[in-house]
Amino acid sequence: MWSKRNSRVGILAATTLVVLSVGLAACSGGGGINTADPSTVTPRDTLTVTDLFADHSVEPAPVGNANFMAIGKYGPALHHFEGTLSLPKIALKVALAGSMEVPPDIERREAFFPSLEIQFFLDGDNLVPTQRGIIFPTTGVPWPDTASVDTLNMSEAELERYLYTQSVHGGRSGVIIGPGKAWSEQTDEGYSRASFPFTLVAWPNSNSRNGIATFLYDNNSVSSLRMQIVQEATPWSMLDMWGQSPMTYRPHNIKDRAILGARFAIELARKLPMKTWAELNDSRPGLASQVTNIQHQQGRTEGISVAGLVVDDVIYAHPCRARYGNFPYCQQMRHSVYSITKTMGAGVAMLRLAQKFGSDVFDLHVSDFVDVQAHHNGWENVTFGHALSMATGVGYRARSGSDGGFNTADEDPGLLRMIATPSQREKLSVAFALGDNYPWGPGEVARYDSMHTYILSAAMDAYLKEREGPESDLWDMVQEEVLDPIGIFHLPMMRTVESDGSPGLPLIYSGLLATVDDIAKVAKLFNEGGTYNGQQLLHSGKLSEALYRTDIKYGLATGEWGIDYHLSFWLRPTPWWLRNSNCTFWVPMMSGYGGNVVMILPNGTTAFHLADNWNWDEGLIRAAHDVSPLCPN
Image (cartoon, rainbow, N blue to C red; front, side, top):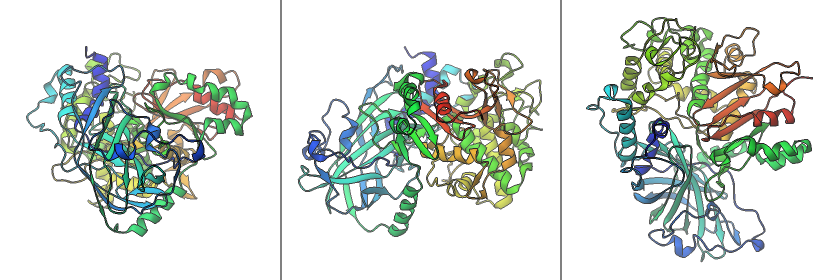
């Protein structure tokens, strides 16, 4: 039976099952060619030359992920690669991979990898794609016609079913292609071999599915492309997908190849080192038991994508988990971080605007920049800061229970109704139409509502356009003025879909697809007061306020374990096991649906746990404390 919990959990992202007409995507390559002694490695018996030159895959299930990397006796690629791969629409086999409940008529739909053209060039042993953002195939299924669908008056069950169905039959699926590797193996009959990671991204809720593809090539031709997807951030929809199809290769010089190569070299040089827990053990022997047991402290390990600590600008992590073996391009695996976007997206954007134009931007009124279409006057005095702190004083009073304390009832069904519409204007209309005045005013009580973060994004974008011109764009500003300087050159953000082909408004309430490297660098920027290399990128005063590093704490109580919420951050009090040490502090957290959490700790470390196992325990905080005490001596 399709349970209510599974349907709700699924529909906030059910759009993910767009896998069933979905597009390719990618995770950048961190990993590299296997450095084991080739004489000790068993020669390849899977994804052989014969296998890859077949038109279709014949395996009844995906193969081990290690088969997409170098095996046996291997060396550098024998051939240069520079040009365009043209992929046809590829039928994929689909199998349920977990305890998932879906409507029976939707359960076994056929999945497709869309027709795409992808340009790559070889840089050393790196296979580098020229397009690094989200690719939306022009030959894909267009966004479903919502004009005749009255989602506002649908029942909750009808709305969930509608969105689930659209995620299967239509919608816009995107792809991110990541840098891969190229090499040669002695048993490959003179061909070179390559692989690359990709991420399937389902619009509109940014659900990610990570996969790997591989092929053989020489100077003029390629084999079929083999791919499989065996990892996702969708606990309601765990699916294995795999397939193979012929493709074509057109060798040609890549435009601006020298510039792209130089940029890629800078990107690699600025990545943070990523090491294992064992290496953290080696550097700090006293941590042995803590590091060994950390996986048990993190709950259901099968639901963890990756977890670890950032210590002294080094990422220490467990391998990126996937079915059929660890994901070989771990460092660049892209994660649906969901509401972490509220901090890394909306929070960063506001703090940058404040640095550029002054902290008064927090006091601007939303209604001065957005056409408020509400049937009440509750938005009249709502400021940008109120919206960022989930304290607008507007919500679903009839559904929200008591008049005090944090409440997430406003997310349901309002967010689902907003998700059901594609364009900026339609989403704003839905967001304003739902809800009413609470008996309290703005800034008095925190009530969680992603739609209010979306409304804030429209207001911030309008304000930026007023200051810098109609061609300016909120997320482009963040990318160019904050992310590029700190070494994050590719951080995809989902957007609204506009009929005129314009880029659309960034979905800064849940639209980020981040790597661990991205998260570590943004957390470092927060920990260092918004300064990088002596340049103040974020407003230091407002950032200190957001992180509870000021004498006065302005956040509002959530009613959950003493946690506050302020300016897009969750603020957690001193862990119980340290409260007898005469030490008090707050832990600022970025948190997202499913078990995604990033903690910015007072000892300068960052703890991260990206998962869909619904677990937010304290294991990583304890490990960070063992690395360096959280309390000063």
